[in-house]
Image 1 (tube, one colour):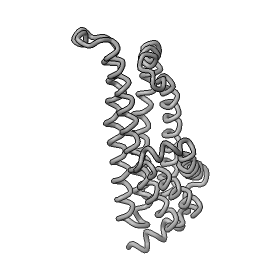
Image 2 (image 1 turned 90 degrees about the vertical axis):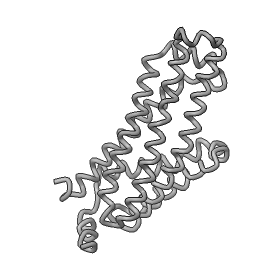
Image 3 (image 1 turned 135 degrees about the vertical axis):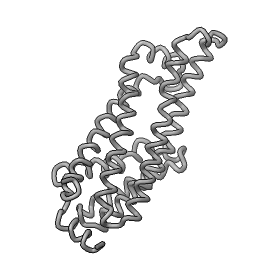
Length: 231
């Protein structure tokens, strides 16, 4: 059934995309526990709200899992349009997801450092707090790298949408603009100087695509025509 009806893939992709936004919101909320440039306050905040911190950690993992599902469904959806481009796009997205999953280790490390295990007694508390805060800095640096891969992904998905007519070409343009916005993270200081404005194209493009997939799906006739062209 999934292979025969592109709208099933489209709406499933929309559902997983929506979960990406929702779990991302939970993760961002838990990020408020981190006090900018204050290692001691950050340590106290995390230790006082450990359930919220672990909820945020779980949400970060769910973001990755949901985006992997979106990537797989988009590959299947756009494969009839251009198999090579769809495959390259999927590789960019999966690379970004792999990095994002790997850097989640930096979110576990602060709790290991701050819980005061016996073997850590050789360090002063100020040193442990500084190391814990450094983990968040490293996570942020890694996340900047993820944005670059997701930027290429959005750019290629925008191209596939524009070429296919499975979806309105306006969505293709918005996704391409989202990709260009994320690609500013090739130079992180430049991207951060434009924050939060640089995030607007990404949120607008990806959220618009999500809502369209959920409400409208795709043009099934155009999907069948692409398959016939490839045969």
